[in-house]
Amino acid sequence: ITGYKAENTPVRAVEWRLIVLESFAGVPGFVAAMFRHFRSLRSLTRDHGWIHTLLEEAENERMHLLTCMKVFKAGPITRMLVISAQVIMTPFVGALYIVKPGAAHRFVGYLEETACLTYANIIHQVETSGTPLHAEWSDLAAPNIAKTYWKLSDEAKFVDVLKCMFADECNHRDVNHTFATMSSDDPNPFVYKHQEDALRAWRLEADGATTDLGCEKTLGTKAR
Image (cartoon, rainbow, N blue to C red; front, side, top):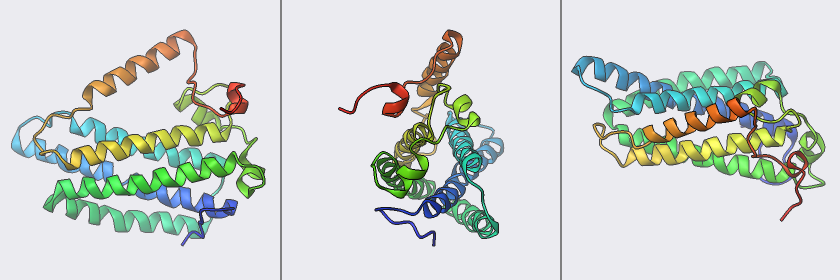
C-alpha cells in the first residue's frame, strides 16, 4: 500500500509507512486498557497494574505519530488511511480482546516486531551514504516535541528520534509478548520498570542532562 521496500526506499514511501504503522499501533493499547478498566469496575476488583502500562503504550505510539507530523505532512489519501486504520483496528482488537485477550496481545507483539524491523531498516538507510533517506534525513534536525519528550540534546538529529522510537517499539514488543503468556489476573511485572523509568527521567531533568541515545554526529563519537 505504502510502496515501502527494504533497499533504497523512497522518502515518501517511508513517510507513508510510519504514519500508517503508528496509526495502527496506537489503537490496541487504548482498547485493551478500556476493556480492563470496565472489567475492573464491573468486578469491583483491582487490575493489578495492567491499565497503566497499556495506556502508556497508547500514549507513546501517539507521540510517535505526532512527532512524525512535525517532520512531514499527511495528504488526503494518508489521512483516509489513518481513519481506515481506526475503523478497522478498533472493532477487531476489541472483539479479539473479549474472546481471547492473550491472542490480542500476541497479535500486537507481532505487529510491534514489524515496527522494529521497519525502524531498524530505516535507521540503517539514514546512516548509509548514497541512499535517498541519507540524502534527506541524515542532517535533519529533531523536532522540538521529540527533544522534550525523549529528553534529547539541542543538537539532536531526526535519526536520534528514530532510534528512540525503535527502542520504544522493542519495549512494546516484549511487553505484549509477555502479556500474551500471562493470565488476566496476574500482577503486571512491568510496574517496577515504570517506577525506575520515572526516577531516571526525574534525575535527568533535575541534572539538566539529556539521554545518550544518538547518532555519531550528535554524540561526537566514531563508528565502532
